[in-house]
Amino acid sequence: MPQPEDNRCERRTVAVIGGGPAGLMAAEVLSQAGVKVDLYDAMPSVGRKFLMAGKGGMNITHSEPFDKFLSRYGSGQAHIKPLLDAFGSESLRAWAEGLGIGTFIGSSGKVFPADMKAAPLLRAWLHRLRIGGVKFHMRHQWLGWSGRTLRFQTPEGEKLVSADAVVLALGGGSWARLGSTGAWVPLLAQRGVSVEPLQPSNCGFDVGWSEFFQNRFAGQPLKPVLASSTNSTGLKFCEQGELVVTADGVEGSLIYKMSALLREQIAAAGTALIYLDLAPGKDKQFLIDRISAPRGKHSMANHLRKRIGIGGVKAALLREVLSKADFDDPLRLCEAIKALPVKLVAARPIDEAISSAGGVSFEALDERLMIRSLPGVFCAGEMLDWEAPTGGYLLTACFAGGRVAGEGVLAWLQCDCKGKSLNLSTPAA
Image (tube, one colour):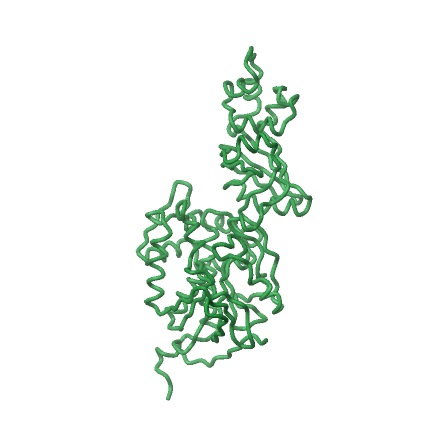
C-alpha cells in the first residue's frame, strides 16, 4: 500500500557530519522537509568555533551592497555567488529574526544580534532543531567509509552508520582545538576527490623584529594606519584601519584583509612587502614643513611627537625599519612616514589562523554541492575551496552553503513528496 503523501520524506535518513553553521543549516533544511537527520560531531558539543567567533561581539553578516559584499570573496566569488543568491545577508537576518533574535547594523556596516552574543542564537537554533527531530551524536569522529557505511570513532569504540545521503560540513584546518582539524582531507583525497591544500587565512605574518622592539612593543596596536601592497600581477590593496604588533610580526583586522594577497606573494617570491602610511590624512609636504622646523635641543623622537603627533610604537617602528641616517634626515623620514616598507617573511601557522583557504575544489562539485564522483555525498562550509575576510563574510557563506547543500540533498533524494523514484548510490570501498 502506498505511504501517505506526508510520510514519504520521513523514510529517508541523512547523516550530517559537522556541527558548525553549515552543518546545522543543512540539518534544518532537511528536518523541515521531514527527513530523518542524524548529526555527528567529534567534539562534546556543537558550534564551538561559532561561539568563539562571537566572544568579541557576534558579527553575523554585513549590510553592504551585494556587489561589494560578493567582491570580498576574491577569486572564489564566481562559486560563492550562487550560494549568496540563494541565501544572502538579508535572508540570514530574516532567519535570525525567525529564531527570535533581532539584529542591528553597526556604524561600520557590520550586522550583529541585538545582544551582541552568539550563545542565545545557538541555543534557540538547537532547540528548534531538536523539536524538528534532529538527533545529535557527540564525540563521533568521522573515519571515512567501510564499504557502503560510514565509520565513526566513538567513546564506545568504532561505529558503523548507514544513510541515504551525507552532508560533510567538517570545517577547514584552523583552530583544531575547536574541531576544525582538516583530518578529512586524506579521507576524501583517497577517494579521488580534488582537494586544494589547506592554508592559513585571516592570519598574522612574521617579520623578525629586533629583541628590543619585540619585548617593548608586542601587543600594542598601530592605529590609524593606511596599509598597501601590490602583487606581481598588479593587484593592489590599499585600506586604512589598524593592526597589532606581535612578538613575531603583525596581525589584526587590516592584515587579515590582506592575508590572501600576502600569502600568495610569499609563496611566489619568498617575502612580501607592505607599505604603511603612519600619518593618513596628512600629505608629505605638510610633514616636511612641520619636521623641518628647528628642533633646538629636542631629540628627533621628541620633535616627531610634538610637531606631527607620532610617538610610541609608531616612532619605534620607524627606528626599527630605518637606518639612523634616514631617521635623522627630515625628507627621508617623511617619505618613510608616508610609505614605510615592512617585509613579511612567513604566514603564521594555520592553527593560529581565524580561518583557512583551500579545501574541496568546486570543480569536484555539481551546482548542488554534491561531489560528482561520490553521488549522495554533499559538502558545505569552510571545507570548500574559498576564503573571505572577517566582517561577517565567512559566516554568511557558511550558512548559505549549508542551506544550498541541504536543498541539494532534497533534490537528489527527490524528496519533494511527489512520489518520484530514488536513485541512491553510496561510495564503494
